[in-house]
Image (cartoon, rainbow, N blue to C red; front, side, top):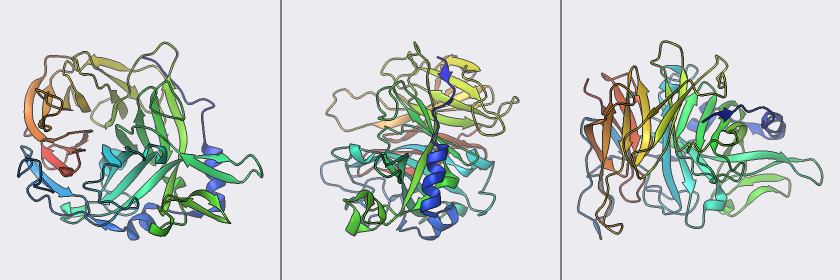
Length: 382
């Protein structure tokens, strides 16, 4: 289960070269120019056509919103597009232990992967301002890219990062994003890709340019997006490791310091989780995991470690693959590795989780299915 340290697999210099050529963009600018607004959760279903007339409201619900109904850069609605699927979630509590220290705002970040003809466009991250549980949070999409030098004239440029982006953890200025083996064009062994938020840059965006990418006629484009976030470094499975990095979360509750938790998606109960301690710099301290345990739950889509226990979001098994998706389930495992217990009903299509100690102890979650996509927070009730 060893994860190889980043070593020479770093794009820090290429990111700096790109930032020197383009306009730097911080979160203040990104959110200040936010193009979309979330909407009310409603009845948790956006279309009453061929599906049941209402969605499923999670138990212990504290806060929720739906995605914007206006057109996104691909010309479709974020809440219903089949071209982008939301997967990972993390917050400024993960990153800084509270609101963003410079902005004073509470921010949620959500990762998406391209699908149905959009796989070649890679993955993106949405930054959302959820300060004071805003009923209509503003947000901005940022495309993830791999910076590199053009061969002909050494001009810095970039290419999409094709990956599933199944989980995400905010660590200081870094965003850790999960990669299952074989799902990334950057590396095939599986592991974690790390993006440096301070390296974001502004490019030429807008609907008129949503089919343009890279350098062209003195300008840089990114499929209509206004901002790109370059890859900084990666951690990949060492030879012989078969660990599936399906989800990621940050644990701030252990006495030994902060750590990254990665977990596996399997249709059986044989999935595993592992913990890697972090150095103060935000890098993984060592390639060897510092703890590992069995999930003992099938179809896990998100996992968070809290003190001596853990919580998992999982899909429910459908009787037939063509049946409508069922409400998800939040499982509790105390201590880690023991038999899990059902704890809360979740919305349809649950994905990644992020722990937040506020509001009596809660987890952030999200749904992936078109027409039933929501971002929400539920209390743990303990």
